[in-house]
Image 1 (cartoon, each protein chain N blue to C red):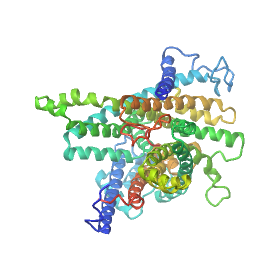
Image 2: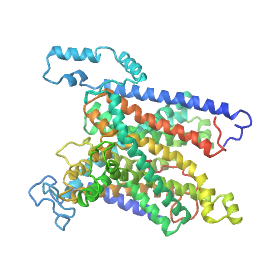
Image 3: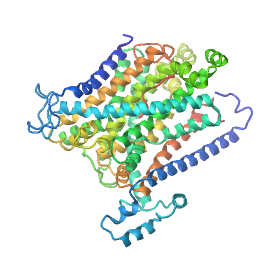
Image 4: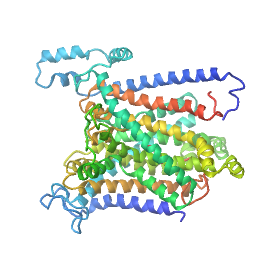
Length: 326
Length: 287
């Protein structure tokens, strides 16, 4: 909590420098992720050209494919090549699907993004409701109950939860689809995301609920809350307006990170429900050693994490004026 | 009432890990023997029922846990050792080198764990080595941060300065004077890490990485059971339940150990009304 900021520099300038530094760090991280994945996959024993032409291909066909993929050039040249094209929006062609990577990734995101949004939303609503309840009744039975369920929620494997939800709601009751995705625009497409979103929301909601409870309990013991209570501010308003606003700042950062991690974190659950999202493509790409597709998925997933943590830092300053940017 | 979490955690963790350890010496049935009635619900003869081939699920859970526990323990040991050494050296050396080591660990944290495991599996093959290395790699930053912060704060303490003044060498200073003071937080982190590593191993097993058939493994048992959900949910219930309760036990054990070993961390346990101010030590890693 630096007090200088406003006094010794114009807020605008400080803010601009902060944004520029963060943008540079963002770019550097994406570059390093791409480089790491590229290096990791170029040391693979098998080679991509053999994969493309298949085991029965003639030596000529193999050499043609090898030339087409540019595999005889040293790796820095190939990486520079990929980087140059990626910057112009051309992510290459997937070796497994024989289809433009950019298009596959766009399709994957059209499933994964709504799924991540839905489960983050569910997790936030549950975390606020139960976290506030626990913090208000700190030490009571409600608190103990909420914390016990939260501990359980963080420990149970989410893909197992997905299987059980599928077994009950899709196989037994037949009220929701058991997997797959018909594509947006078909009626009832959203129903295909409900069970996976629930399975993903439980551990995340449990984590956030613990956080809401801890920060809110901390804020509620502060002097300004006691002062407000002494002034006769009604308890409901006290919690909603005075306490929650301050408690929400660290929760927001955790929420952002949760969402960012979900772009890769849906991987196992997507495969439980056969959802054609980013995780589905990532698994297929890893099985087929599909370098272009894996590169794109890894860069996007890591980029999401860095992007949201940057955004959360910015939001910090907006929600809490005491924090100034260095 | 104070140590109820610790006791419950120790009990659950001991039950889960104990089931696997007992399974090394004795199994209630041959985990691969076929021919019993398939899809039998839980009974005295088969406490967890039988699966689609009529195999005893309890025996398969006990045998399947071997790989899970071994991979998780191995990954935490390797990741903990490397992370502690890196973080400790970074804190001790300080300067550009220390800063660089910590940035690398931040970078690792930003990289999605499952994706990293998939990449390593693509390079090293789907066997145990890739899975163990991937989980170990993801543990490094947690231990590195802990050791880094610990060594940084210990470096200026009087007993360290005094030891240095009487001519204690660098390595001895780190190992004999600083490490014992870091043992408690590292132990707590190891407990919580073990829980996370078990979950990660099962997730990867579900995706087909790790132990290969016909050896049973928790994650893959769940994948196979999913195919037969319409016939019977029982084979899908028990492997996940044993895994979940073991993880819960380890998490509770970690929380309880922290409270026990570090009274200064006035941690928010439900039965204590006093609110604490943040936690210095490990919490279960965010999902």
